[in-house]
Length: 136
Length: 136
Image (cartoon, each protein chain N blue to C red):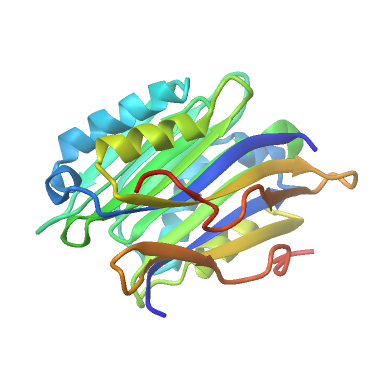
């Protein structure tokens, strides 16, 4: 069952609030995360909210990474979506978990862009919900 | 069970390849989709690949929308992720399905940013996989 891409939906808990508030630091972390996944950045867009919180995405040659932070909760919602056999979105996820000092990361992985015999595209969950917590 | 946001992961099939190749048209469609969801755009980033394909995201005050297109397959991978009770990501999804002339749309919805009693954040699938096909 060949999929065009893999997409990890993640909830990061217990992150350092200072790190989650720093838009430049978040941007740099996302660039490093993309490189860790062996992906190539084509475009990026980041925004710092008042009084706090950062949102941003990097558009890759192989899909995208995204982040939304709630510093007051130590929480970040992240997505790591890459296409092609040369990339590994888990490497970006693990990099982000370390960089944000997350105490736990809840993940669900999809395989996306699976072409069925009738030409329709589907996706499937490739890991159990709550199956993988990266840090403790 | 209060969630900070809703995130719909979508596979669009049977779309018009011309529409999927037009980066300006895709950008405009994404702006309209965000408005349909009653969301506010803060930033955007779009890229056209050679020989074909478009990727892009709009960063919202309420999270993000993203798209990656494969015109040669009539396929687009889209995400509609919004926070707050005033937004509805399904309105953006339905707008995009019509605009891209999708023959079918496979969707899975998450509720994200659910705070547990121990302060950890989780997500849950809120609809069955393959439960909702928007167009036929």
